[in-house]
Length: 136
Image (cartoon, rainbow, N blue to C red; front, side, top):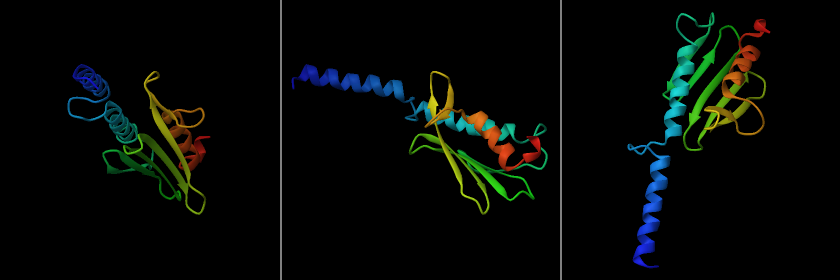
């Protein structure tokens, strides 16, 4: 390998990394995911919150939803190591429902890793199914 081709390869790597990472070394999809989790948690609390809904913030990239006396829990978590948002819904005594979402830049949304579906729509449907069946 000549020095010129080595330099060009190094510059190509630099250009690729500049497109994929910010100046802090944080992937833009990671920042977008954390903002999504923050917005959803904020939307589910406050003045416009659903009656009786409890939101537990376990980490910057994770929250859990409960509604006493319903015997169910919904967890939304950004898993940076696999680059996916994970929605887990559980009615105690029944099998867990787990769905993963990846970021789709063209639509600027988190879509299901397999099949059709989008995070916000699925979260709404899951809340109705597990915590607010009277909303059907």
